[in-house]
Image (cartoon, rainbow, N blue to C red; front, top):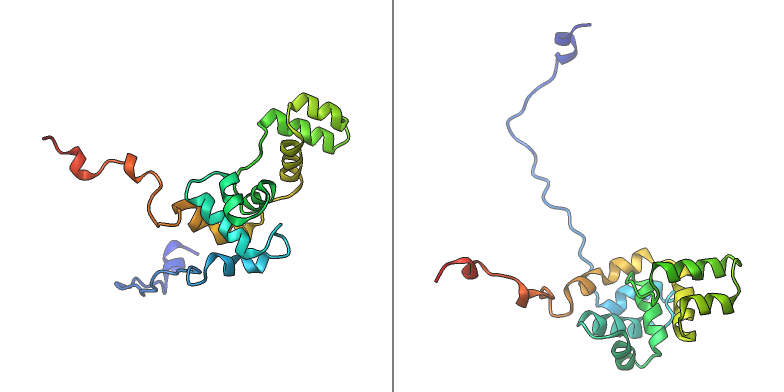
Length: 168
């Protein structure tokens, strides 16, 4: 079988079918509604979780988000962790020590001493190490966390505009 036999019957067309752009837009539903599917896995009600995420997305601290949502700061941090945010109060070495404690290689007292963490920070670090973020919840909050509530780029003020590039 030669190349001409293989190519027999192959046609070249000059037009393509326009299939459009595939989109999935769940922004019709508010954030609390999008988080409702994950209510059992979240440490607070979906409406409270939405408030935590929205306040945090505005650039405010976890403690402020917790205060506005009327939950404990640890609950707010757990919520943000499950939604994909990096909230561990410990660095890489501290997280490794917590994992060693979880694997029973260290006592809790030794682990806390080595990390230098407070009870609250150590408990949050242990939670982060033992609970994976929820992929669907991460997707539900992605737009809010990446752009903030106003829909503007968080660093808009720091970015140049085309007019800034022109010489005066």
